[in-house]
Image (cartoon, rainbow, N blue to C red; front, top):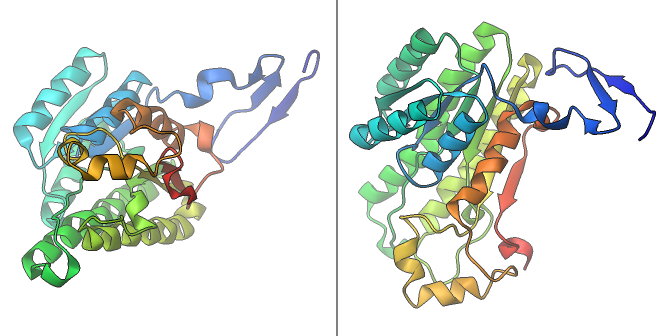
Length: 280
């Protein structure tokens, strides 16, 4: 591209970007400087990783988790990285608690630009044995909780008029039934997350709000590692074309991509990170 320059404008960029001999916008389009992000389920696992990657890219972080003590610890670590951070102990299935948290984040940080819905859980039962209470718990946290935070944060974003990015954490289990694993209700809850993602994306595109989802495969998180060490682990691993389980840090750059202007024309998309597992 030597000697070639072209200016490009997009609705979410705000400024003209230059395509020059070192490429489009270079790494600046991945910057989250001046942005405020809420990350639910951020006290551990993939939520913690994504919160820290967003902070490393310049964002201030509201660390939200049902485990308030652990959330406070992660917020302190993020503050040590140079970003503003505050923790909130919230059960995302409790709409009143979600509304109050969003109100406090807006008051404390002045704006909300990014939401990552990583709060989730599972209860493993074969479908014939699934207790009603466990079914309700899975759906209330994974599906209703995602709806609660999407709707309330989206309302704030619409009112502010500066657009935003919402990232829901789905799963490959939204697209398949995991072989020989009693997680059918979890699969159904995550399939619902995918459709919520598309529905919000369709309705909110006119406000400059992008809504996407990440569908992780098998990551070596505290939730997954115990069963990975059972006889189920090698069976699952044998179905991954890349021949390994993912390290938690591998989800971080994807979250930054979807949160930033690097993905300014991406909405309603379910981005799968699974080492090829769902190829088959």
